[in-house]
Amino acid sequence: MTQRLVVIGGDATGMSAASQARRRRDAGDLEIIAFERGHHTSYSACGIPYWVAGDVDDPNALVARTAEEHRARDIDLRLGTEAVEIDLDGRRVRTRGQDGGAEAWTGFDHLVIATGAVPVRPPIPGIDADGVHGVQTLDDGEALMAGIDRDVVHDAVVVGGGYIGVEMAEAMLRHGLRVTLLERDEQPMATLDPDMGHLVREAMEGMGIRVETGSAVREVLTGGDGRVRAVATDKDEYPAQMVVLGLGVRPETTLAREAGLPLGARGGLLTDLSMRVRGTEGIWAGGDCVEVLNLVSGALQHIALGTHANKHGRIIGTNIGGGYATFPGVVGTAVSKVCDVEIARSGLKESQARAAGLRYVTAVIESTSRAGYFPGAAPMTVKIIAEHSTGRLLGLQIVGREGAAKRVDIGAVALTAGMTVGQMTALDLGYAPPFSPVWDPVLVAASKAAEKVRTTCG
Ligand SMILES: Cc1cc2nc3c(=O)[nH]c(=O)nc-3n(C[C@H](O)[C@H](O)[C@H](O)COP(=O)(O)OP(=O)(O)OC[C@H]3O[C@@H](n4cnc5c(N)ncnc54)[C@H](O)[C@@H]3O)c2cc1C
Image (cartoon, rainbow, N blue to C red; front, side, top):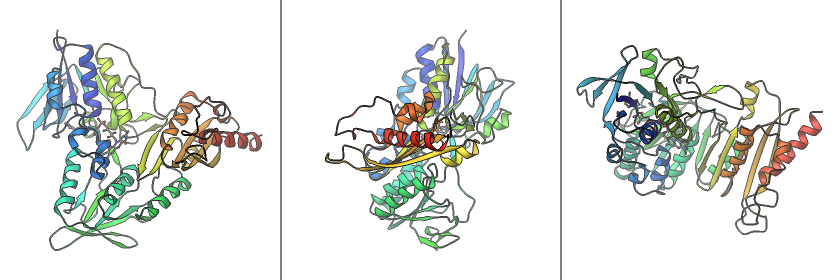
């Protein structure tokens, strides 16, 4: 008998799951219906800052697979349709068409919850004023681009100094705007330790971006026309005709919570290794709406990244398709950039290592992206955190120019393999002058950390 798979959320996780299930089971065996409340499907939100910056000139280029392409593969994708209730006992989902359209119940044998995350929007006066933009969806990107074209904008304030905030600061700068970045923490890029975040701050200031840290946004001030005119913090006021919000996200688990599905301390759905929601049969979840295991700290975390979302979707689709796949967890790898400055991290930062009850040593080194004598060699700072006594690699952070960020993948592999910094020094990495010094910067940092472990942890 034909089974039915219902997917809630038609982007990275949801459509990866649907596509993978379809690859393994044909339409006579598995009917697939996907509900997406927005107007777009299978697009790269990751590309939005680069489209706004002008690196990508057509937003359609961000769409990996169109609605028509999904439908041609027998996936019944219904855009503009919101799931409003999950009835676990009845194994059905209630949906509502756009703008209060008709409601309907759809039964399922398998359900994939891929509802993503919602941006944090602090309840401060003026936050919904004209000229205040999020960048979570393609629709948000379109509204922001229209605002730049339509309105007279000289000053942009970016609220939040995480990776989306710094990427959007670059995008605003490249539109010729005066840019201020406001961050509540001590430094931008709080996923790094403050000493590494400081390097990002210095680089941004060198580009002409004003970076104000250590103060919380209190109010978005508007003019008589209701449009934004400034942002007030507890320290000062910053003129702005455009405000971009990059304050992070939280898992979108409203439906799951109302249905009584298990949520973790960070509000994300809890799954087993196969991405099945714990304690259920045939209910799966992945992407930004779940919590994942950090393999280094052993703790559950909410990390909203497309790289995980796509893997989760594929694993879910494989399992629904009759195969077997699992997601062991993450080591917390992320890369980003602001103009020509590349930023990367993997594993734990110092405060996370402390929170996990780990003792550690750190090593910070300066090196270059290529052999020092080779044209284009650019400086890079590498920081390593290694466990006290054992020397196990706990974390790697890199700030530098071209060629810096993707070196963090060495750390991601070493962390996954549970390597010590001593073992890392023997890694047979590629070398030629245009690509690295004879001692790769990551190996230099590992060597310094290994020396510290030897000399200070006896
Ligand atoms: C500006 C920006 C830059 C980013 N850059 C990177 C990057 O460089 N690298 C990286 O790894 N990650 C990046 N990310 C994160 C990445 O885009 C997300 O992790 C990824 O899209 C998550 O996929 P998802 O399918 O879990 O959720 P989403 O992509 O958010 O999709 C969830 C979908 O569910 C829909 N939905 C929610 N509730 C319902 C409902 N009740 N009914 C119907 N539909 C519903 C939503 O409309 C949405 O389309 C970036 C994100 C943003 C916003």
